[in-house]
Image 1 (cartoon, rainbow over the protein chains, first blue to last red):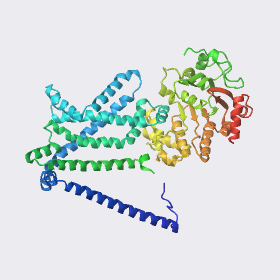
Image 2: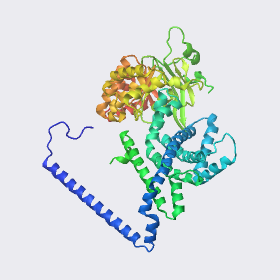
Image 3: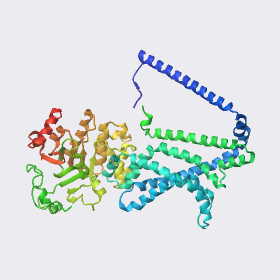
Image 4: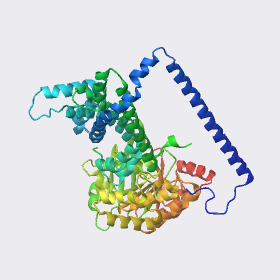
Length: 289
Length: 286
């Protein structure tokens, strides 16, 4: 647990000093090699792209920096809607998918309908393309003209995201639940905990920690798929704002700007999750030698 | 499940075992009420059978554990020791026979499994602590969630129990920061804090480094001295000889021999026991 040699008076032996110096020189060498190969590869890629016959037009219609800067505030305002959509949907998805995953772990004949419904749900919404679900809910539901049903496209866009992603996330959670060793269950049951208590206090907490990286993967995926709700036409998110700009100038730079903003949004999320799983001391086999 | 106790009781266990029922009187009536003067054993196992598919793991196993006694189960790996303990804790569903705990047939599907389990503590070979919880949370989980004790009371009980197993200073540690012997002592504390009437130990020292075995066995001996009723599956013959009131030798899912330790371990009558003990002696474990 403590650092090697911590506490006592220790001066590294000449051999150890020599080893440290060698390792430092190897590290310097690796950094130089990595930098060199990156620069060379990037240079080649840039040269190839820049020397294509259509490059000048391509640059003007996709990388018009002045125009991109001009549309940035509008697209960033739209992105704020994507962020809010993502946060709301993610919370609902996590709750809903956990229920579905737990439903699939229920045993006993009484729970057959629940189990069957959960399986049917995941089969259906994992198979349906998200864009079809968006069309069916976003245009279909309001056209039913049922007074008490919400008619907002934003609501149905969210609903489509929740249904589709819950199917995926519930499978991730189920895999996590099933990866917890049966002896943990036996230990909890032997203490007198009921099935629900065993799940809540012993199995699910361990399962969620284990599947944190794939859960994050789905979260990042959701983040960009919130852009798809723009197909419903009335949700002014980053993608729709970019589309409006593009349709006025026939310049695709707004799409590139929106794309860069989405990328910038997801990177901190990935780092955050890495940090969270390290802090929990649950890094797993992947992070050790 | 229409089982006649008369047929099962004749010769499974040698008559030399003082605590084993040899009467042909129906067990149900006696185990529930007990004739005047004789206290029924705390745990009675009667013609137990358990199979996994075609593999019969326990066959006609009958065994009594009187209150405050320590019964040690010995036998090679795969002889059915672990399965027997798991059946008693209802972690396995038995195929036939009965298990009586304090006069109650706990193999009856109508009993509340969770209520029975919280009366019987089990400690596993691989500790099975909950890795995402601190030592203290491991121990307070069942008191708080099963027995409805408040956090503060549960934590002071847990700390007292940790103190008893000599680990009060590690209450906030995570299980994987402890040595194997410490983890096993936490597992024992976790089981004891529910005030079980019976403790089951399933090869609790088998996963430990040799120098850590002693601290766990010392704790078991202390428990026995405090009057706990214990059923211990182990390969530690020294422990069996010193602490057991009764040693039961299982082979191939059957009780081959049972009796006081000095008899079973030094003058075994059954050839299977003799063979097993010779192997143990050859390995330098006795």
